[in-house]
Length: 99
Image (cartoon, rainbow, N blue to C red; front, side):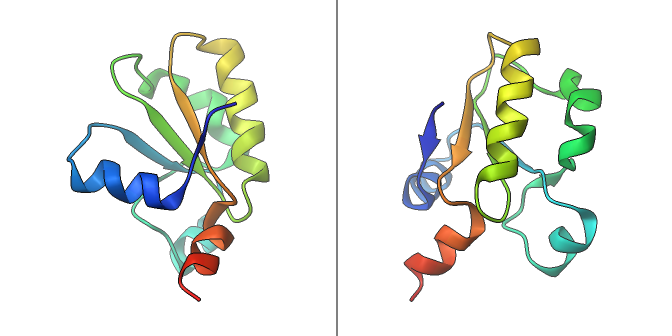
């Protein structure tokens, strides 16, 4: 599974790289704090598989990186031609970089 650090994600943004950013947490978690990702809770991710395209990478995140890994495993089975990245250590990893 491909991992992407928060620093690499910020580099992609600075370079205006085209990618999708998906938050697989629940709505209340997303409402409390997010980094701009589109909310698709883990339980609904396969129902929205049609929004992912092989033309751009997809970065998926959650709180710790566990739910996002599960989402990627599910999606890769259905969409083997899409390039998925797990945000390493999720949002908690981001807090670690700000300390």
